[in-house]
Image (cartoon, rainbow, N blue to C red):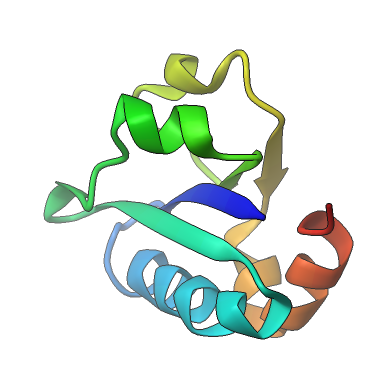
Amino acid sequence: MKIVAVTACPTGIAHTYMAADALMKTAPKYNVHIKVETQGAMGVENQLTPHDIAQADKVLIVSDIEVEHAARFEAMHTIRIPIEDVLLNVDKVFLVHCRE
């Protein structure tokens, strides 16, 4: 399964990057290929390309705030997850939301 994700938090510092790291480290355990875009204090990093999005089976929006350029995911199976869910139990996120 291929997933693209966007992580963002209100301050755009620690939680944005902690959630991205947790997703990237855990994805291989569930045979998931993932690319994570962060929208933090440093701006948008590791930006998802139209090709990345088109190739994805699902989109995870891991945020408690609106993310930039969300319209690019309109035609995709998109799942919104509170950032706290990923930080507290990333395995549960993959078990519940990232199955084929």
